[in-house]
Length: 406
Image 1 (cartoon, helix red, strand yellow):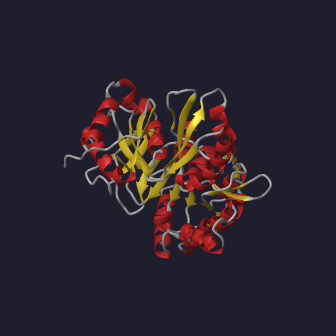
Image 2 (cartoon, rainbow, N blue to C red; image 1 turned 120 degrees about the vertical axis):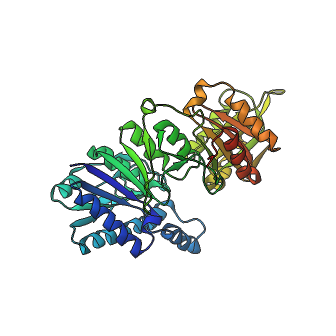
Image 3 (cartoon, rainbow, N blue to C red; image 1 turned 90 degrees about the vertical axis):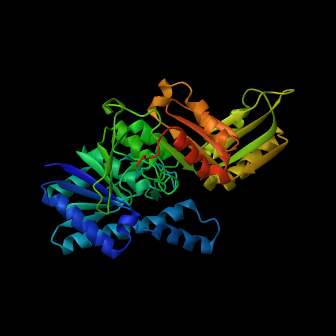
């Protein structure tokens, strides 16, 4: 008997008919002698609908109330799936984050999990009842509802799998696994049957929408067997495994395009110790993630300081940075949201010299200017103009021979 955690995304539960089909899929897994815990997202489009209603009232609803509002989407879906399971003869019970409880920190809209007791879930499983958990949400120690960020239901599922020491965690979505690039951008992208945790973590963090980055991080940390499958019947799938479990590996495993990127530049900043800390510490206090950072060479004791952030945080970050700029005497602050980040990812980067040069050559051949560069052992990222994003992905994809020859 295996303990299997199944997560179904918004497109998999988009309508009542979809939910009923998911119930049959869950029931078939149970009929094979397995124990099952199900995690669901909100029905497709419901989260955006709820957020739009909030912004009709005010342009800046509080993040605490946003969390309380959008968490209801997953709650409704979990209850509907439990009802669907019961209607075909299976005992089921829905749970929201605070009923487990899935305890998080106090950072609304992007909370991190602190604790997940297993007593409630384990008792439910022992009673031969299928738990149906509302993903994406948790609760603070003082009782406020939080959410884990877009895609956070993946993280809920993996955290439950880790806590219960499940045999595997299955992520069901509208695609049949991981590809070398977004097929909507690269029609000749190849399906990957297997990929390492580290490569998947980089891809997820750089714009690939198949998995939530923190879900991959947790899966690697707790060695949760993780597989991405289609909810529409395709037999193809992608397993995420340890690097040492790969028999052989391509130098570059995938190419991503991240659109939620903006950059902020402080012009003519005093080049002295402590300035970088003074610039970035207000962003850290506001839980704004800073990614790429560049400071040019000092001229006459001054330098320009540029960094990237998620576009969703641009207004908040700009306000904070303008205050800092006044304090440190920067000449001006420039913000640009007409950029994207294109990245090549693969564990072969660390052992194969010249990969960056090949990537830069592919962009040069398309007359694409690189504004910022960031590298690690597993990825090379470039910030470019937004209008060249998809062209850049196709060029890099072809350069590293990732196109499907069929």
